[in-house]
Amino acid sequence: MQDAIHETIHIPAPVERVWKAISDHKEFGQWFRVRLDQPFVAGTKSTGQITVPGFDHIKWNADVVAVDPPTKLAFRWHPYAIDPETDYSTEPTTLVEFTLSERDGGTEVQVVESGFGTLPEHRRDEAFRMNSQGWAAQMKNVRQYLA
Amino acid sequence: MSGNISPDRAVVFAALGDATRLGLIERLADGEDRSIQQLAAGSPLTRQAMTKHLRVLEDARLVRSTRYGREVRFRLEQEELQRAQAFLVHVARQWSSALKRLGDHITKE
Image 1: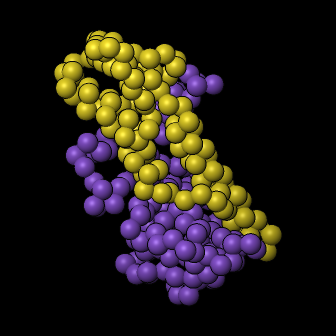
Image 2 (image 1 turned 45 degrees about the horizontal axis):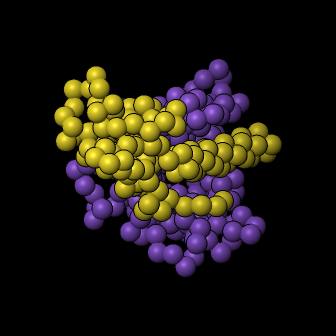
């Protein structure tokens, strides 16, 4: 996996229960803090309004990529596009993937957000081809030198 | 929630997304400046290919070049690299707290 962030959590509840909390747009909104206008359907847009106090002027805009019960939800978005005056539509999107699996009588939820190095079409250049080696992990090595 | 992925940040991340360029950054990570000859030592790349990679890093403001007479030397610009790392740490933290809220949402019902 390249240019990606991985976060996982173990939740002591059945996969079906966790799946509902992630895939049901109203439940998703409760913990993510967003009021979504429509259910998640693969291949459609997801719109809404962020409900985090102080950030409730921000709109939620995502493209739903996959809804595969009960293990996978994926969407693309502009990460932390929080300036209402800025048009983010031409900027790079990242892919957010939730993957659920049964573990130790509960559910492991993994979130991977990837694509931070992906440039919009008009800026793409041969020199910027992503290599198969992940850099996020390698950056940790570099960081040791910088400390 | 603060900061966004600007096109400039994407350029930085794309510049980092290459094993050769990451290798160059590691070679320069001690803060010393080096010539292309020094950076190319032990590498199968031609001087021309090396120059191209260094140019990409320079455009992303990850390295800076200085001319000394007929020689050009390259040095790591740590600021941009640290900014990129800080952004990723920030995004990871946002996800970590969102997942914690998901866990609380389910277990406290």
